[in-house]
Length: 90
Image (tube, rainbow, N blue to C red; front, side, top):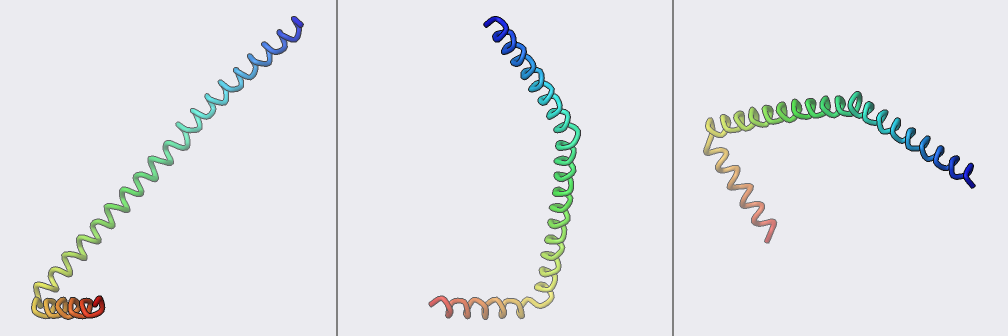
């Protein structure tokens, strides 16, 4: 029985050591590969969002300039669209 107990203790110790090594490898993998990739993806996403915001702002400015140039045309167009939508929803 004593040999069995020693064998179990030895196996348990070996497993604990292997688990510790795996944890260490996982920590290294996370810090060396995953975290930098996440930072890079975050930076790309931030850049894309800023670009989209800039494009949207430019488009709003362009439409605003067109409306200021011909306000009556756009008011009549909006009234026509409103009328048609009102007729369709009845």
